[in-house]
Length: 500
Image 1: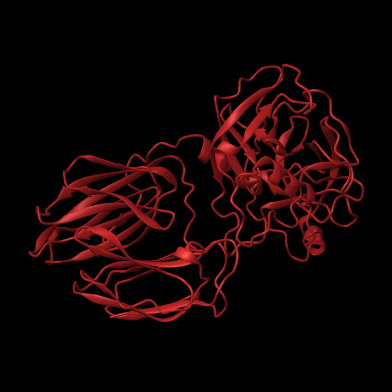
Image 2: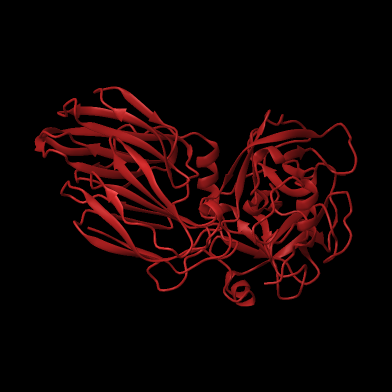
């Protein structure tokens, strides 16, 4: 697809001149529809009270206020650190100060976890949330947008608004513009865009009426109450016949928006019970009941991966027959790296982890012990940790694994985890048989890391990239993690390894 990126590149350079150069990635995303208005008229002052001008030194993108602290925008506008962005509400002419503006610093950014992830269409899930401090003050000039309910039916016509070019590659008026655009059904739009339209996208526009370069993330609103029905995302050129603007469909993400901006309480009781030695748990709460009332062999190791929907996890040991030489460990797993760790030892005590992804490891000492019941409850805001692009957990004594397993190259933006935790406790070895990753100093682009569970913690043994096979790795207690991450450009064939 041809891109609407010329002005976006200029703004990125002017607004963030200190940013480190990209390795070999583009400065902007080809095809992104950058919110300029074609075929429209100047909006009335404060007609769109929820609209904000996003700035990185100068005008960059746009967004819509949903609460005093939160703004919804496009994910492709939100890939830099929060400190680089300011949001201005109550604005009309972005070159003038009228005294009605409210300027706020962005302090947190939540990009949709499946934006720009393997397995999704280009530009799918192009939505993000920005938190400001201090909060906006609602008044006659600044108000929140109306969020649609899930399943909201788009209207026949909608209004898109923004600052900027009034023709493809043209000039940019300083005053806010608007244009009414017609709905284009999904089937027609998908045919015109050769299958590039996802269910979470919606299309509006016609020849001569469209959004265009320079203001991604701005609102598309439906109805007299100006319900947010879309977020400006991408398109082919500007106002070209047969190529309407493509918007992130807001109703598709209503629950994610509310879950990310309104804290959720814990479940009153665990909703799931797990009794196996290890496994993957995806739930808002659960009981891990392992050999309750029964015995556990000496030197037993079990690993549970907990992926919760909210960003705070509270663990509580409800009952335990474990001895002092045994341990249950909670390891925060963020950015594909084992992080801070807590040992759970006291019945009834709360152990809180500020994350939605935790690895729970049972390590039994050199004598048999008794079972336990460990509960967890999640709460707070929607967890922004991306799900794994690849995952494998084995209890097999020996085996092998190839990644990716589809026969082609791995993708950009990978985030894979492979857990080696056989049922029988003994020393094991991991050896690589094939290895083809992007190279680089310090393996800072794409990398495989191996962590060995030893003496109550996960220790990094090797970080590898390029095409040289890593050395054979010893897992003293038979348990280990293999992680794989890739950046935004240059891929390879992947790798395969075996354990024995």
